[in-house]
Length: 157
Image 1 (tube, rainbow, N blue to C red):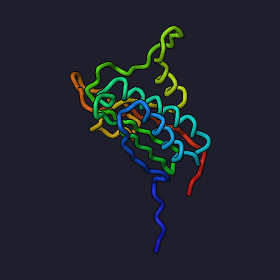
Image 2: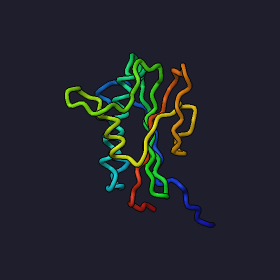
Image 3: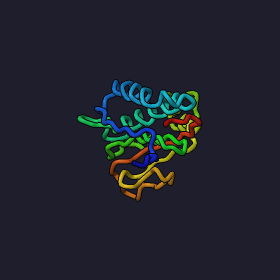
Image 4: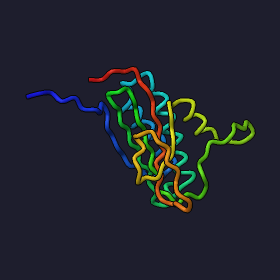
């Protein structure tokens, strides 16, 4: 029988209740999955936490009975792909803001930009793994995927 190399070294998905205290649980879950990728583990964990917090703050995910979905895919090409999927119905827009030391918060997407190779947001019915940024059509209120790519030098078999 011939061995077939899978293009994935990591593939995991989990739904979390849309509660602030679940952000810690999401970080712990992500950390456990990426610990073998030591060169990017901290960055993936921080960005996952920031995206999770934004989903709670800006969408229906933070409302009653809300949920946040988190997906991690590690590719044999040396890329870790992170997705955080919200439930849509955004009340405000999560956009990268200029750094303002007098404003509490507002640094999450700056951190994501600094710690990842690339990141973006796309409607949940598109495939963000291509690395393309697909803006939501005008009037779109559905679920969004906030994603980031991290290049790793770690080789897994």
